[in-house]
Figure 1 (cartoon, rainbow, N blue to C red):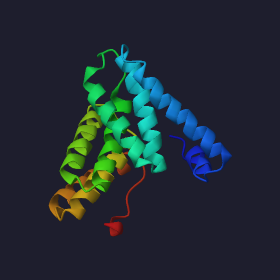
Figure 2: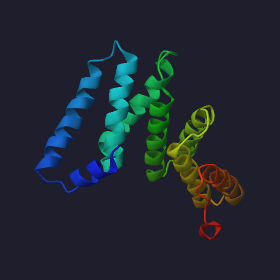
Figure 3: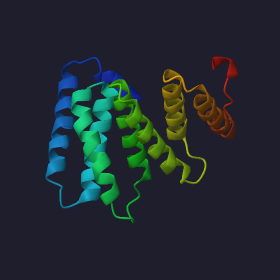
Figure 4: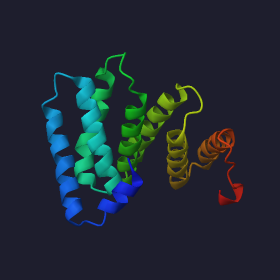
Length: 169
């Protein structure tokens, strides 16, 4: 999830083609890892997240859907919350872009549950989830719920020493 790398390859030159082929190969490799759900989840999740961040949603959707299906099968000893949260968040964004807001809300809520279960500080993912969930509620005209999520966002930002400019919302 390196934004500089993604921006660089977003120029779509020769480097882009090599990068895209490596992600394609990684996604194909996940099928061979069926006996190892934790490894398969990691590969599928990573490739799906890369495609989603690059805006290649037709490739991201099946991978992120597969990652969401694999998440409950992961062994308890696997440190899974970060990868699961990232996949849930990206799939939620994809569903929102498709106009499937009920599914997006469920995915955002699940990602937020996982984040809330982690010890503080919870980092950037919490901020992104609360922002996306609040924006979803604003779009749906559910302003009380949006205000609640943005209030939580304000608390998270204050805890991180970055207070929000309330004039923005």
